[in-house]
Image (cartoon, rainbow, N blue to C red):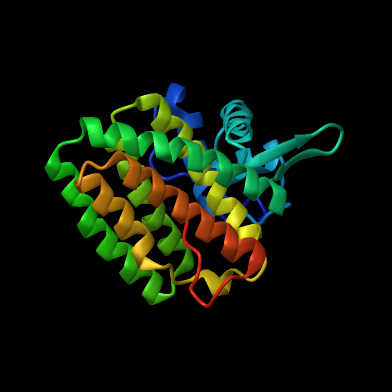
Length: 231
């Protein structure tokens, strides 16, 4: 943990009832970027001094990021940035596969053609960021493609669940062994999903989502092929 005086306080004060939400976003970004490594102990008093706030908003923020699965509260030991296991990653991928099939079905029935076509330009960015080798940015843009599909589905509850599991996906991928081998995805996986959405073909969309997650599992657990895994 950084000393209280070597990190800047939050820039721009916000109204008190929103302060804990600002802290949640700051901590979320630091955890997902690796600035706060897995296993880091989070101490309320130190965090309050670092951010220039009272301990109340810090406590609320810690409760929320605990709910999001980014930190764990261990009795008599304290609060720590989560150190997820391979089994945790598998659980999240299984859950994401199920809700992404549902999102694809709903998007086919509800989304406008222009909303679905807009996903194509986002895929160009996905490919470019993986090719550039910035793993954190690549994962962010990759997950944004999936998130846009949930937005197109028009179901706010599904979207909220995806957002929580997307953050956990990034944290879990950071915990996976040898992440460097996964810098470049198999572009056809996303393109197949998009093609099925544009064709309004529910069976093809569901099959494309399943293929996406089978490829992910093969890469993570069986080291299949030279193509890299995407998220």
